[in-house]
Image (tube, rainbow, N blue to C red):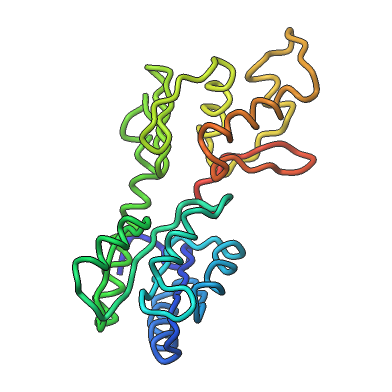
Length: 236
């Protein structure tokens, strides 16, 4: 159906109506997507941490923790890669849409929706996600993933709309890691490429620079591979 390969993407369905969960799960799995489900907001938060979905279909009207509260809580979870969040609701009031977008939702779908239409919407959203990941190929001077932009020509980083002027080594470090997303750079490789063989640095130098970068750009992008090194994550 699309040039995107469905089984490369994880989708989390969140709804307190089991019939809807089963219906949507069946159709998305039939299309080839890797589908996870949750029956309420609290379970959804745990599932997000565990499975790190690329896209979340989130019902608004749920007991205990509604969809808007859950959406806001998801956006505050560290060490996930900013999943696309689509709110599902049978209501069409403007105020709930505004509240949803203010909570961090990316899109809004009113139920009921036909499976083929839903799948088309999902593909459209995933294409947008892919375009963000691949935008660096369109401009050799700019690397852009989600809400992070690295401008190699101007030597600046923009994170969540805020322009950051990083010290040279921090900039070179984030640029190195982001140049090959999901590739693990060993500590020796990082030392060699950033500081060079002729420069003597302490054992904790990389760790200090990584910590400072995370403080500035957030914890979602740089993952520690224990005993090996670090990698820049855009997709889990």
